[in-house]
Image 1 (tube, rainbow, N blue to C red):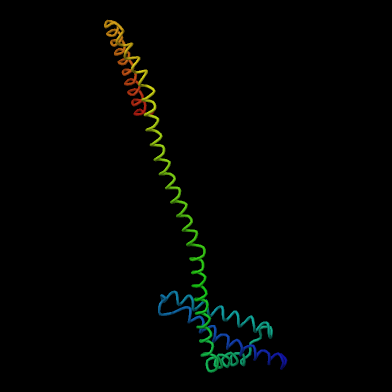
Image 2 (cartoon, rainbow, N blue to C red):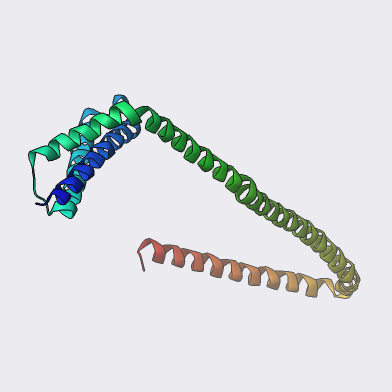
Length: 210
């Protein structure tokens, strides 16, 4: 491996050590170990170390085709130490500022959604429902009034016919009236028996599952 390749490898590994320090602090900031169960922390730690190892190996392979040297580990430690001493405080401030900014933007977008979209749509739907309920009640009241008017008109129309039929009925001889009444009673009895028979037959068929 040439001196230029070794120099680039050293710079890349120092940069990866710095990147690892920043990634480790970011990981701890979002993980919140005290609030997580031990097995969740354990699984996340394994995944974190695997991802970091893959990233470092990918950069190393890109720089020097994946050749390992002792100074590579020293470069990683130097980069990590440089991050801890020089960049850590500034990075944590920037990270907190970024997190707060993202949270503020999120809350702002949620408020915009609630006040511009959700509440107007909800108010419009409730207004439409109220209008439909009011119209339904109005139509129901009008139908009741119309039904009462119709019954009143039918009574008015029927009244003259009833008066005429009553007068005619009185002119019919008493014997004929009795015969007619008896015939009407028999006819009504026959109709009642037919109804009872049909009801009994239908009930029997339903009971037997026919």
